[in-house]
Length: 287
Ligand SMILES: [Zn+2]
Image 1 (cartoon, rainbow, N blue to C red):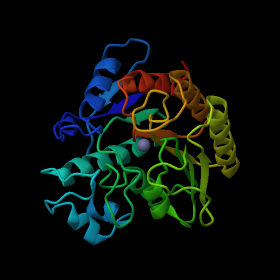
Image 2 (cartoon, protein in one colour; image 1 turned 90 degrees about the vertical axis):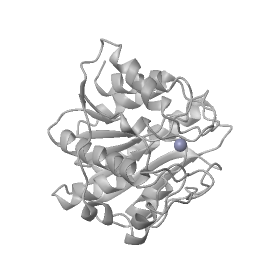
Image 3 (cartoon, rainbow, N blue to C red; image 1 turned 180 degrees about the vertical axis):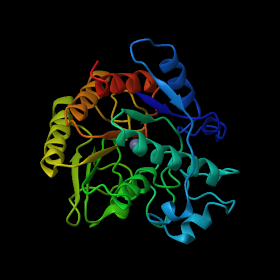
């Protein structure tokens, strides 16, 4: 299993913001201190404007250099464009590694799944997973599935991938919750599995199982996973019911699809994030 990460992604922060550098730093520390998984550590490469502009407008890309907050959740940081591009580059590297048949996880910030075609929002500046799957299609993969198990709807990914041939998007999320989209399916290829905030663990697991069944039915050649760990029972940003063993099960179930697979970190704001990521990775590795 390869882990893609770098030091710079922990070097920007705003006091009190839940999307904080410790999410990555503590997870790196946890993964480096374990011996159950053999991990290879690599830093992200680079991304071209052409790759970014498959998913985003030129205006949005230019806006990243304007020193003003994007919204109340999404601050401007010096060099945020560079950090966002590194996170995209990690997603593109994850795609390349997945194509060799190896398991891979991008442990980077900022996350991406709320960034729409035209707008940075919800802690997300560029849509890492959308850019990676559009690259996959542009370079020969025929059928790509995106599976998003972050507790929040991947509105940005849906916005960018809507009705694109060769792509199907499956999102399991709490609704109502930020960003209040994802109540129904959209277009020909975006499938949403909303779960009520009061739902039990059994109900949440059933929605995940339903989505994974539909994904399997699509018969993808490649699966890209928006791995958010904020449906966890003790996450401070939502009311999900999941436990570490559920993330382990998700990893196992995705592994059992037996197609090239890569996962990118999205949300997950509890102190237990390192354990949840570790549980998921063990599942992906069949341990
Ligand atoms: Zn989230």
